[in-house]
Length: 92
Image 1 (cartoon, rainbow, N blue to C red):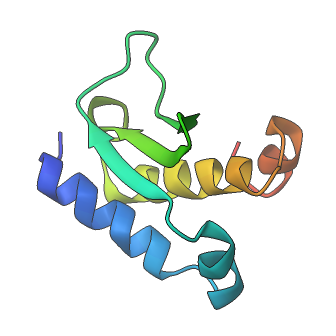
Image 2 (image 1 turned 90 degrees about the vertical axis):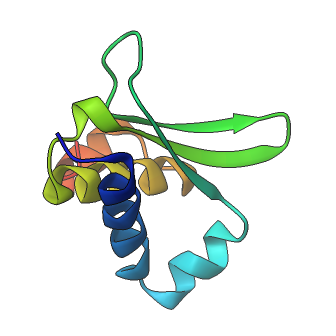
């Protein structure tokens, strides 16, 4: 399993790979790394109390490729995509 720092670095690399227009849409979205989710989720887009955040769960993302896929999946949700659209793009 990757360390919290490695997971964070992989999440940042995924965000850095996005086009400028996506960064402009994301604005102040926080990306947070947490240890695990009780239901085994890999990540979640979680707009709580006005804070827009994407949470990546470390134990469900064993390598940088999975972290990237999870981050892009959750960014897709932020942009309004549903599971079917994300699956068609390869992030489902």
